Length: 97
Image (cartoon, rainbow, N blue to C red; front, side, top):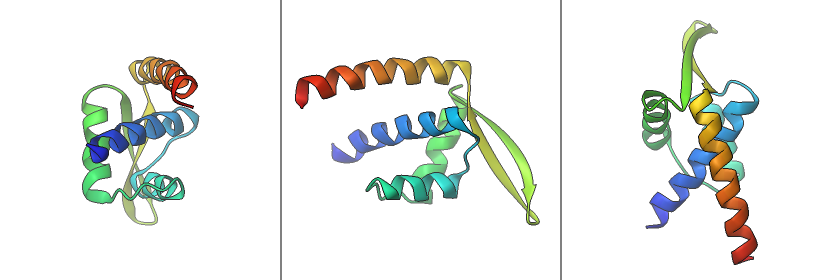
């Protein structure tokens, strides 16, 4: 139960950061660790891929230091989902806290 709950929170983080600037897998893993999440590549990369497949993120590959890095940015559908999540999150925080 906790794992799926925290993965939902992580997805909100991903959408939030992808709305600010392009993100990539290792960066979001480290960013989530700063917030106490322990999600490894085996969780983050499939999550990024499914969010892209479902239309919440857009992926662009770039060559960085001789390696291909995939950068993710939010889509219109992702922005809508993020705004909906923020509203629900605000309501939940007010009720719980």
